[in-house]
Length: 325
Image 1 (tube, rainbow, N blue to C red):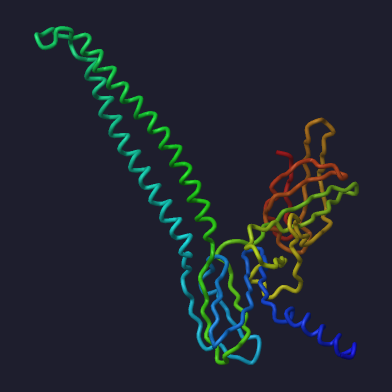
Image 2 (image 1 turned 90 degrees about the vertical axis):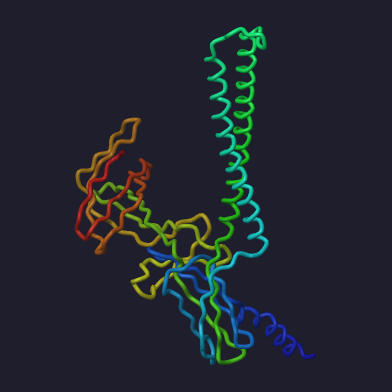
């Protein structure tokens, strides 16, 4: 085979999977997480399971080629059989342990009453009970021994119940998938994109305030994201969901906070003490041209870290006094 033909064939087989590879993306907005999943309908049907519960009426499906979407059904999430069996077993264990706790409470009441009754008896010598003090003491000791057994059983039951509840919470946390979208298409094979907004998530603002020597401060807005689904390419949009299609999307590498924006703002009444304790106070004015959301802010003075404060929400041209806690 000619070298140029061989190169063309190899290039085709290497590049083709990348072209048709399914895309799974999450875009973090300031008020929500947008999930987009590409899939291929086979024999006119595709089923796409979303990674978490979604907001009502946020599901969208569109074809990516010449096919047409005929019908969309949203099926509730069904826990896999293996996980459901494990959940059922753990719930049954939890119920049994809780029943045992109730039984132990009843036993405690019974033997506590018996011990009190024995100790309050007036000893009376009879033919059938020639040594009443010994009988009372034995009855009291028996009731107390039973109480000790109840306390030991309760302690072990509480420990077992905590272990079961911890395991149950872990299994329930792993069952986080949302509903499944079943899509019927006009063509037997059609590529589609499913998009939905998750019920929870988004990013919240985190600021850096870096005081400068010229009575200004560098204000940096960072995006601190909540937990995002695994196995998705994640990006950050600087706007809210209502802001429309974002003009720029920022990558979200693991362990970093994307920088959304940066401004230079005027600062007044700045006071930074040089004592061992970090003491600072200053007034900062919002001249960014936009509303600033409330968020945690890290304060630096001439590159020296001073601490963390809460920056309140600031309307345009509003000012806030920032001081050490």
